Length: 356
Ligand SMILES: Nc1ncnc2c1ncn2[C@@H]1O[C@H](COP(=O)(O)OP(=O)(O)OP(=O)(O)O)[C@@H](O)[C@H]1O
Ligand SMILES: [Mg+2]
Image (cartoon, rainbow, N blue to C red; front, side, top):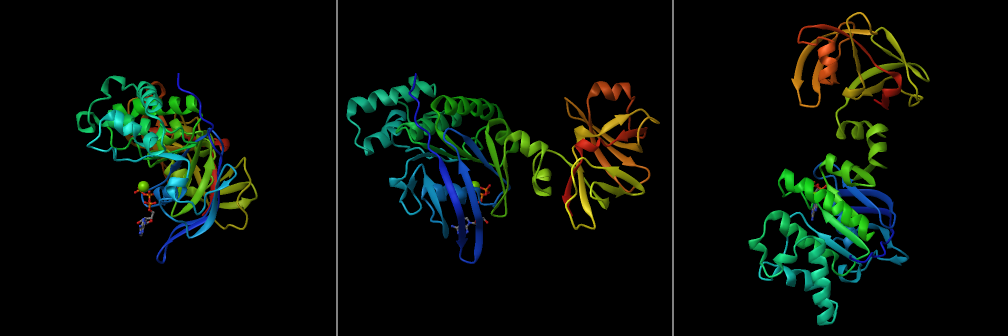
C-alpha cells in the first residue's frame, strides 16, 4: 500500500485580492489543519478559484499572508510551494502516455529513473489504472483521465492537494464513484486537501469542513452538519438545502410575532431589529390531521420526488406559503391531496432567525 504523506497545516491571514477596482476577495482568514479535507463552496464568481490560485501561487494576493506549516509562502513562486493540483478540465499532456504524465513531476525534481518507475506503478495501482499505463489521454474516458490527473498531482507526495472542481465535467455516476474514491484515498494518504466545488451535495458528502463563500467573503466555516443545521447567515441558509423564509416582528428577546400569532424561539434574537427573518427547513415543518395543529392551511401542490413529497401549504391566517417535505407514508395517513385542509406546527427548536 502507498505510504502516508505528512499533510501540512495551511494558515491564511488577512488575504485580499483586487482585479483593478474589483475586490474579488475580502479579508480572508482561514486555518486548514493537517490531513483535513476542506471544500470551498459558493455560487459562481464568489472567489473560490481565485483563493485556490493564491494558495498555489498562480495568482498574487493584493494583501495578506499565507503559511504552509512554518514556512511563509506568501511571495513564493508556484515551483517553490509544496502542492499538487487537479483542474476541472483534465489538463493532461496529450502527447505523453499515462505513465509519462504521472512521471512528469517526479522527473522534474530529478528523481532517479528506477524510483520514478516504481512510484508511477504504485500510483497507477492506487487509482486503478495499472493496465492503462501505455495509453494516451485521448484513449481514456473522462473519469479515467481525472484519475490520471489525480495520480500525477499526488506523485511527488505533496503536503497539500488542491482540486478545482475536479468532478464537474464528469457524468453523475462517475462523479459519485470518484467522489468516494478521492475521499478514501485522501484519508488513507493523510494529505491536506482543498476542493473547490459549487455542488453543495458534493461538499457536504466529502468535506471535514465546508467554507461557504459569497461575494469574496467567507460566510461560514463549519462541519457539514453545522453548516446545514446551524447556518450562520440567511445566505448560507438559502444556499445549502431548501429553506422557508418569512418575516416576523420581535416581541421580546426570544419571542416574535407572525401575523397575530406569537412564537417562542429557543435562541435569542439578533438585537436592535424591528424585523427578523425566520426560517425553517421543509422537513422540519410538522403536518398534522386537520384540527390537530397550531396553524391551519390548504394544500396548494404536491410534487412526488421519490423519497418524499414536496408539498406547498398556504396558511389561512397569515399571508404565507410554506414548502413542507412529507414522507409518502405520512402523506397516505394524512390523506394528503391538493385542496385538502391540513394543520401544521412549526417546532421552535427548528426555527432559525436572521437579521432582516
Ligand atoms: N484575471 C482576472 N481579472 C479580472 N477579474 C477576475 C480575474 N479572475 C477572476 N476575476 C473575477 O473575480 C471573481 C471571482 O472569480 P473566481 O474565478 O474566483 O470565481 P469562482 O468562485 O471560482 O466561480 P466559478 O464557480 O464560476 O468557477 C469573478 O467576478 C471574476 O470575474
Ligand atoms: Mg472557479
